[in-house]
Length: 143
Image (cartoon, rainbow, N blue to C red; front, side, top):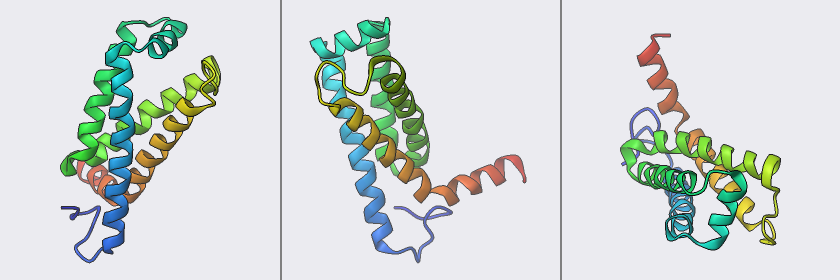
């Protein structure tokens, strides 16, 4: 399961549970948002129209989020999925802060909050697997 450079065999079991909890949390948030994006929910259409990228942006982001969710859940690609999740959620948070506002369409900041929680879950996963990332960089670029 979680072994190798990121999780040595003597790693505390709690770290593995935390890792799986973060994975599942991030994947659930990403997959839950797909219902709105692929279903053409009026709020989702309004958001992407406000950004000027409806419908291509909505569908493209939905596909990217679906891929990220699967990468996060598959143990061999968790680190890649978490890094991509951080990138995607950084974009979402930036759009909320700089373009559409934290509260969009009287949602009370729920959409922003979900993006923030997903960002933190993905960032936490990257932190947990930092040794795996460092090991990959060292092997790849011979530091």
